[in-house]
Image: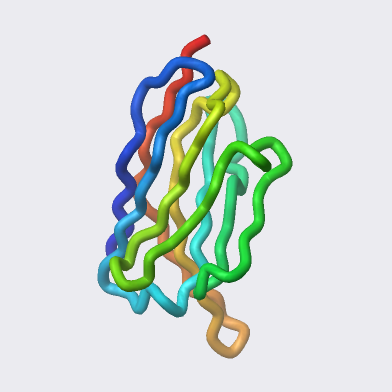
Length: 119
């Protein structure tokens, strides 16, 4: 199983980035997918999540209206469009794939991609 994030980088405040998470080794279309982030000295936090079909989404209050999560099940890829970036969005962003079978959760993590927003 591999989840590979890409698209991170350095951007000025107010700018935009699009992150991608490419999955292999899993049936991508049956997994809930989530973006998390972890800033230095802080706990990992949920940024945005999508159901297996992409029909349902959930966002942290801090990113609502600025970030959009999406997925393309034909390409086994999830995306995070990030607009109006702020310095406080600086973090390592991780993708997570999760599914539950008979109350047992199976989940996988990517290695993370760094997003740095300068003021």
